[in-house]
Image (tube, rainbow, N blue to C red; front, top):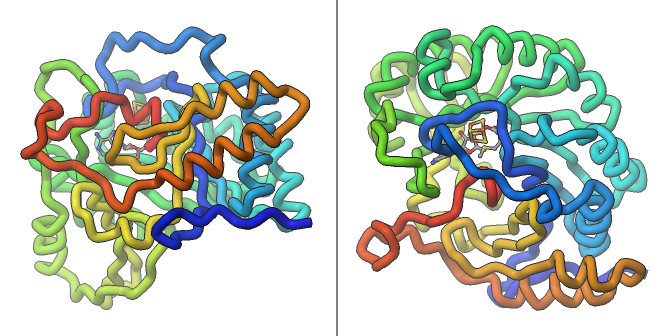
Length: 336
Ligand code: SAM
Ligand code: SF4
């Protein structure tokens, strides 16, 4: 018997779940975390068994795509066990895609295991190709380690999309270098507009907001851009560079132009379900999960009740009362 799929009040089918498996990270990117982060006590986190039960319940309710994120998902202890367990849903055909977003630091170690677990495409976050700038923006990261990870991932057969946060005065001058580098290595590339997330301290953010409309104008100096109709149900929009045939993505989370086709929800590492990236409404799924260890019905009901509350659109509105429209939670908690 197949359960009724998750459909929200605006008739959007929710078939994409992003799961943060840890709030910890081996980097401290300046736009994401402060240098001295306080992380959650371990008992707050869903165990790997609980994550399995949670994700499997969502898959049973029609989720077809699972993206594992964090924090840095690959620093969670024994995370490969979780990927291996999830691969049974790929084998059964219930899940179409199992994927992750990573900073790349642990890929050298895990690329083959990820491929073996059925992962085929991954997103690697990388904002610069310059060693020193990389160390500056990530504070604790080192570029050669990530490069070795990317090499290992490609060798293992994983298709890579690079996600680069666009920062004025930081990687503006690397626009074409990054486009060329991705073309040479046959990797897709998406630019992300920086979002006001979390309390990351009062320090200089190194770079500043760089509107992707300006970035597009810069690209036009060298390339002919054709808008593509492709939609993923998320904030990404795509263009083709006619001269090279490359596809580039743009993620502008601050605009409201994608909410009508939103197909996703986000689960934090503590089992809170956020129905919208830009709003604070969430449902605690850990309670029904832990209260009824032998019976998934309470969890299923809680998931359906949460989906029924998914808002029509998000609310990054600078005129509102919240700290300049800033979301108080960290991206590493919700999962980017
Ligand atoms: N650690 C992994 C990584 O870096 O890919 C996964 C989690 S990270 C929070 C997911 C994505 O969010 C990364 O691509 C990162 O660049 C992006 N991100 C973090 N803070 C952001 C912000 N304030 N604005 C826009 N993107 C942000
Ligand atoms: Fe870590 Fe990713 Fe945040 Fe950077 S963006 S600090 S790699 S979680």
